[in-house]
Image (cartoon, rainbow, N blue to C red; front, side):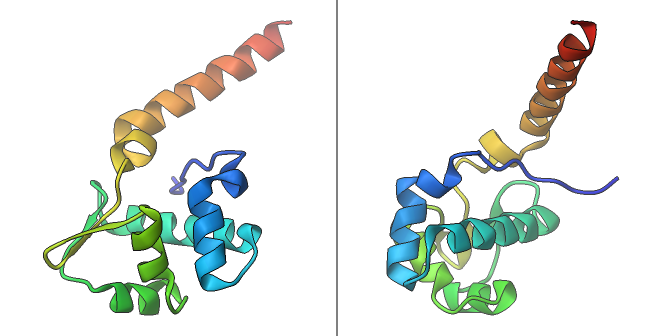
Amino acid sequence: MASWIPVRNNLHESPRTVQVARILEVDKFTVVGMMVRVWSWVGDHTPDGIISDITPEEFDEVVGVVGLGQAMLRAGWMKRSGGDLLFPEWEQWNGRCSKRRLSDARRKQLKRKADQ
């Protein structure tokens, strides 16, 4: 089964998106693509949104965007704790329970639509 991540349909309007776009001097839709890349990578490497023993600069190398780590820290999409990078609200959006909840909601929505 392929991995997946939820992406809000208004992510391009998030103040964090706008802030990262301003810092990196790119458009907000480019930032949305960057975040999909980041969250996919994080999801492949941790179940809890904590990446151990990595600097923001090493993070930039992994995701392929110079300055993104610092921009995400400034915007609050990422935090540092010692040598670790933490992704706040990870469990809310990307934990197993949240993905199950989102999948169940989508399945029920499709069933209701089919029953009409």
